[in-house]
Image (cartoon, rainbow, N blue to C red):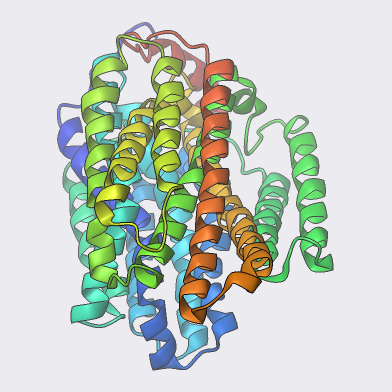
Length: 495
């Protein structure tokens, strides 16, 4: 089979609907957060349950991503994409119509299940549809901007919907997104008819990695609320280590592994997964603590808070489409990713100087630099994570990108929240003798805790930059001819 496949003439239209679906998944990570206080009042659940509205989604999504990626390779990415859209919309409708806490938590878990199918299917569709180097750079630039900026847009949308309509609309808003993306999938998206992985599903691998990742994500979530020394927290981390080690052993032995180790042992992909996971820790630090700072210290309303992040979104879009996409075919990925993460860390460095009386204009340069840096780095990272991978592995390679981000987010929330809490407590103890105004003193302790956590995020992003520069050694992506990969996939499809 030496003939080269012709690219799909409708691939750019398809990109629009794939990016829309990705936006819906990314938005959901933040849009619901802003609605939680109103949902809590309406349904009457306890403070301890509030965390579970976030955790139910994170556990299902993070735990099932690799399974979702493998389903995409088995069923076909387009079919998995469509099933994911329908399921996500149905789960969102269920969440919006929730009459009690159990119904809301069940809907969030279902959103996570179908999100775990949708996210890797979307990214792997791009990986198999855009094979030319320059086109791939543009496509992943747009996709990267959506993935990076969606969280901040979610804050604006969540604030607007909660303030002017009702908390339930933070769920219902997903339905039109899914409907438009589904119409596009039916009418426009055409997946290349090669490269599916028809091998039997690796059930032991699915069980081990799902329980291992759920234990890991839940361990970090529990560490945030119960502390790192809690016996259950330690037990979850031990269980995660044992299960994931067993998973790696099984994958090295079975004939058709869920996650072929060749996906992980490639130096460049490993570098992307590792550096991207670390960078997401830094991003979560920014969103979490700046949101708390703007609303709790500066007194911004949720909607104003969302708009305050817009310059960062603009920076991400510029970095992704105008810097990353233009330079990706001219320079190796490490020379975009490493400086990108470094610029983002400089943005965070500016934000460590926040105080009780800091104005928005003092924060603005940090937000812009953070956006530019992350946008520049994310685009080549997402492209390189799936570049050169065999088509039969495109789904699981894409799932690993999402898994590294999901685990990074869980670590970031737990680690930086713990750091902030400790720093605030210590500051309050050491400065108690100088306190004259209790309210001002409490705000100063808060700001110190946020600033300390952001300092940690600066260091983690700098480490992500070093990791990208050290591990990633791929040259400039050339025109990517799928013929060789198709040859590799044929024997698999014949089984």
